[in-house]
Image (cartoon, rainbow, N blue to C red):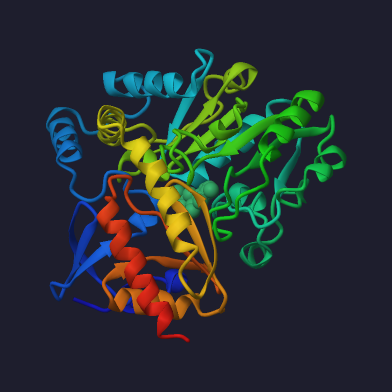
Length: 383
Ligand SMILES: Cc1ncc(COP(=O)(O)O)c(C=O)c1O
């Protein structure tokens, strides 16, 4: 077998681990070493690896019908769209299925153009994906710079700044796109009331409010959607990552007038909502509901914040549920990530001073205890 850099482009850098199997919260590498997977495929494997219910659902579906394109309906697709309507709690909600977070945000951007307006408001340090439209709404200059010119008329307002909303969002704004918690920026939680203030300003100006729930959705924060903590209903919701229970699936959900903007022929994708991914998504949602997993997610999030904040070397632990950022006093998060890997725990470091964990929602209190004890150990070596 050839090496990574002999066959792949260099965009991801060369990974140090090659993983071959997994079950629940654990993965094994080629040398048979086992790791606690506290990154969960970057907030994606909501039921962990090789969950029997997902395996069953996908296997059954593969035997029955793998892929049919969007020329035809299939029961699982209808059931999942209905399930999402119920989770959103609004019967006007209509879904467009795609394959990834970037695509879900591209669809939201295209929908916003159908309002007849062209100006988008996004936020500093946001992350909405790597395709040109999603990148144009991403507020991180290092990711944007090499690919300019991007789509024009995107304004970035300071994330969390309620006062800036009034001047930044006006009657020419087509949509405002916001993450309830900025994941890639280092798990940044806005002040309480920020999403509600955006909602209000969008009502005042007629701009669509899009909530990018790609990272925060599907129970990650302890609610089905991150925006639910503020009791609002957006116009558009974008989903991916956890939605497919580990399989590729994205969705753009429109509510009210935003649900009616796409017309036949105006948008599409071959694989979007394929029966196989959709079967996995339905199985994941059913399991999360029947096993009351979200209560556990909230409790684990609280103990990570409470106990994690007391570890010497930790400046702040923030986030909600199982999307947690651990800010260190030092700028050596990459080194700590490496040391945790040696201690057989996988996390990542989205910022030089911040670790992120986003494990499967089936994480146990014992996993959390183990993680915290290893974090304490590794940080104690730095003093
Ligand atoms: C909030 C958010 N939006 C969009 C994306 C892009 O998703 P994808 O990588 O599936 O295109 C990500 C990925 O990290 C994300 O965190």
